[in-house]
Image 1: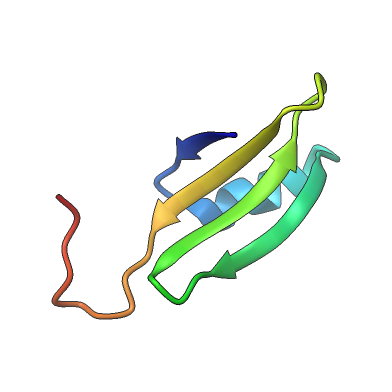
Image 2: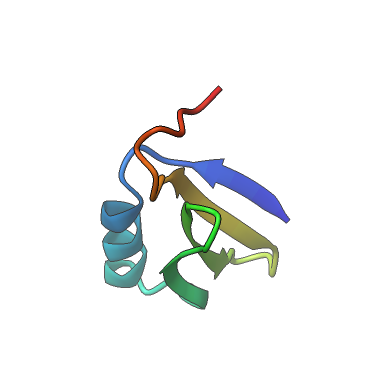
Length: 62
């Protein structure tokens, strides 16, 4: 599965729904802080669409 990082995952999710993409896993914030959703592309491949969303402000991306 490929991961595609986006600046605004909420907007990407809304756009995916507007375009009628198959949402395989809904938009969630994982316990470790990642905010993501999965779609299936027209060729059947799953894509992880994600952005960092840190619960703890002290954590920074590297």
